[in-house]
Figure: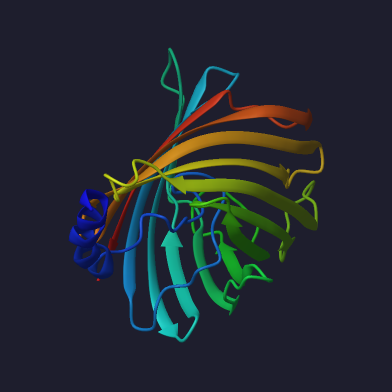
Length: 257
């Protein structure tokens, strides 16, 4: 009876808040789930990360993204990703506005006892920063379903095409990821979700190879409309001339309207 009363006490909060069990790409890990925003829902997402490379250089990345539920099972996204690179021990610094991204997220199917939830995201990255980069368009298939009593599995598979690629860049690159998430603290705590993921991505540069990344993170409800997420990732393997990142720390905040 005590557990039932605890669950009932949390129901009004859960109904009014954004869902801490929903996963957004990069917040906190490189995996996302198949659930679009509701019609008319708006969400502002802020993220920051610091990556320490094998070459004694730190890369600070930031992200500001706005998403809006423009139709049933469909939302649009607009974001910008500024970066700052700093080499330890000297004044070698590079600050850049980074690319601007625009995208559309389509929810295709809802989860049923026989089929997983599925969605497709189409995104374009535009070179709005000072440092030259290619315009690319990516398409990602997103799938997810129940795993055990409360856990969920997540799979992302996608490819990116460079529209105006630079010399030495690949025309097409591929990426994928497999993740697992589970609310923790039940039945006494209904406010946090544990996340783990492994992802593999192909370097845009022709001399580069594949990078495999492993990460763990936590999403926690900190208000009726706010979710805080933290994560840590490490590149477990690289091939070709790709640069390995031993550790990457991520923090993010999402707020719905």
